[in-house]
Each structure stands twice: as structure tokens, then as C-alpha cells.
Length: 356
Image (cartoon, rainbow, N blue to C red; front, top):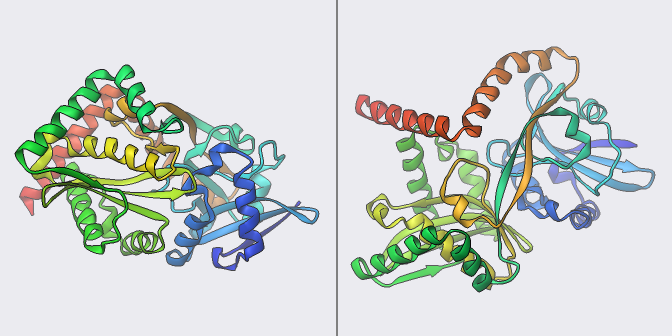
């Protein structure tokens, strides 16, 4: 096999077309995070973005989008923003992961949302988890009926609070695809406040992420949905769409309406909007949010781990990253620990706010 590493912008129409063909060979490759649009977008704002093009004879058989950091430390493309990672190739491709890293000039490649069934990386899994998915293949009515059966309390609560929101504030309506940049700025403001409130790192404090989100909104790869009550914007969601798949990305809401659970109302309205737009599934992303249990129809197995070669950079990365990843994994896998950690982060955020 021949492996050539290029910048995303150097991919031609033939390569992009082949990338799309390979996505069709495996249903799980339909994720927007594995679409060429995502890699091309990240490549506009991240100099470290690269794509390994794998050829077998005269035919391209795989694309490996990644980012290369100092000392040959590699990450998935858009690391920290992606809920699904992997190599874009037909199932059954016989590829040596370490040989791939060598060709890419990487000493290590770590992952935390890798498609678990990809054989090339299977020996390097450190932990396996799942990403919940809302299945809309049968239409919204069928999805809602299944939700009513599987999670009756959640569904009943959402519908009750939606009616109460309408009575207290104004008629509830949902805009599935807003092109208004003011709506996008508002969502990012809400989300930044949430990050600060919960003690998380504010992604929108990084200019390149703001520019990336704006770019996806402008090009239509990103879909901005807004929930309104009368003239009041209550919650919003910015997701990525590729074909019939929506990837949930940035949900946020106005805390003034928190008692109405606007995020949950918004997710149910999002499901209707997606079904009406021909989208058959919404990937909710990995995480400990309990509300996702009420929405999920199935799960995608994903894995966390690292592929490494014997290089100084790989050794340094192990020392710095592995203990932290293990601690984080233990928290994610234990609901009680997750609640304690979440509470501790919120307490820290409050104390930090008072100090400021």
C-alpha cells in the first residue's frame, strides 16, 4: 500500500468523490464528523490538519483525517469537538495501525470517540463506551410512540412543561434551520455561560472554534435550530448534517426559562424537525447526561485508547496523558462518581466567579 499525507485543501474532486463512496460502505461512516466537509472545514482554521490517503495499487482505499502536533503527537481531526472518529474505509480493510502512523510522521495517535468496530485500531482500545442515537427511520410519530413506551415519565414531563411554557410565556414554536447570525451569536453566548457556570473549558473562548462554527453555519453543513415562546428565544441547538444523519453538537438555553426544561423540549422538537427534513437519525454524543436515556433508540459502540510507536514523543505523551485519561474514564463509567465530579466542578465555578 502507498500512503500519502496531504493538507485537506489539497484534496481534489476525485478524492472527495471517493471519500463519499467509502462512507457508503459502512452505515456508521455516515456521521458528519467523518464526512469530508468536516475535515475540510477544520483544515481552513487548523494548520495541523492532515489527511493520509491510502492507495492499494491504482485505487484509493482509505482516508485518515488527523492532526499532527509537536513531537509527532497525533489526534483525530477537530480533537475535542468530535463525537465520532476513525478511518474512512470499507469494512475489512487490512491495515497496520503503526505503519499508518509511521507514514504520517506520528509517534502516537490517541482517540476517545473511535468507532469500536474498526479492526485496525481494535488492539489499542483502553476502554469501550457507547454513543446514544435517536432513530427517526420510521418517522417522528413512530419515534415518539416508542419514546412514550420506553420512557413514559420523560415524555410526559416534556409535554407538560411545553404546555406550561406556552401558557406562561407565549405560543411555542420551533425554527428548524435559522440563517440568522444573531441567533448563532446568542447560542454561543448561552453556551459560554454554561461552560463557565459548570466549571468546564469554554470552547468559544478559542477564536478558531468560533470561526469554524460560523463557517459551517454559512455553508449549510451546520443546522441552527431555535425554540421560541412568543417573542422570546428559549433554547437553541447547532448540529452538523451529512445526508440523513444529524450530529448533535452545541445545545444551549436561556437560564431564565430553566424550570421549563427547554433543552429537553428543544430535543423533542428537533426530532420532529429532522424527521420532516428527511433525517433518519440524530447522534447525541457520549456523555453522562441522564436525559439522553429517555431519547435514545440504539447505541454506537465507541472506544478510547492510543496507538503508539517507540518514539520519545510517544513516551512523553504517555506520562502526561494516560493517568488523566484513566481518571476521567473512571468518572464517566461510574454514575455516582460522575455526579460528584459534576457537583465539584459547579462548586469550583461558583467560587471562581466570586473571586473574580
